[in-house]
Image 1 (spheres, rainbow, N blue to C red):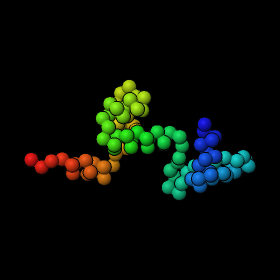
Image 2 (tube, helix red, strand yellow; image 1 turned 180 degrees about the vertical axis):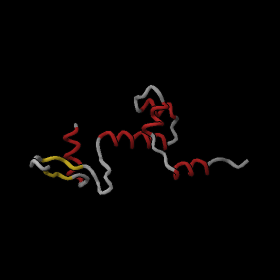
Image 3 (cartoon, rainbow, N blue to C red; image 1 turned 90 degrees about the horizontal axis):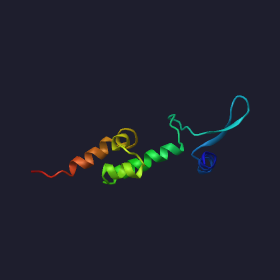
Length: 94
């Protein structure tokens, strides 16, 4: 599955085929900021989007096939300040 994914990244222009110092071909999946794309980052994106959808953390953890929602929140659900601001702004004024 990894090889197919790598070929798809090259085809989409997200990654590039390069040769290493020994002349072996490999796939460079790093962007100009040093960030890398792999199958695992899709899992992070999927779980983060589930968490931001308003689903309960128990539901998100089950969708991620985790037995502990704490793992899901700690490792996989990436929530930034913009998302936190959106949620806080939905609170009712007393």
